Image (cartoon, rainbow, N blue to C red; front, side):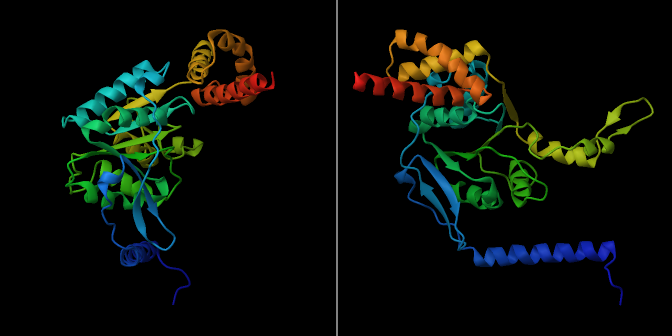
Length: 300
């Protein structure tokens, strides 16, 4: 008897093991039941260690609106137009919001929910580790009258993660059609959702005319991103854009125009220390500065 399996035998063994694990998972995981959809406008999907699966209502939503988001007008227009088409029952594309961290990708999704919740738009947030259950979620809501954003924040995959194939098949590639009341929206700090390595370049080939062709490794890594019909890219803010966002935050927190002007030098130092001029950093500075101003006022 040989000490090692032939490659073909090993591949067959792996396939049988995967099928067995899938059957075992289906047997151990209780069926996903419908929640009371009247209880909330947004839901968070949870898979417990015990195997129990549930949609938990999110009671307190961020009240952010499109008008609150500065310096991303182009991105806002493209996302809002596509979402309005979806809510109206017209054709629309699944969306990948990618690019610099802290530039408003997640906030844009929250603003979209705020804009259309009164028209029956609902949101289900799914962690990437739970995307393996995405087909069950889509099936659960398929007959509902509401329209659903299935939202995965900060999405990226490592090699071999199971949620990758589930998301890929739901986006485009299964025999069963996805219900037209579901829109997949994901945010990511990188355009291609699988890690890319220098060694991937070796899979490129060149034809007789010198044209480059990506190999299977590269094709696999870009195929998931290509299944999102709408790509919206976000870029780091300039100094003026960053200061404009700081000013909006401070105004929202009740500071006077004079105080906002005085805060500008400190805001720049704060960004240098953090190594980023993002909307997130601007909000963090504003909360710190406003808190210190309030404390100083109480002391006086």
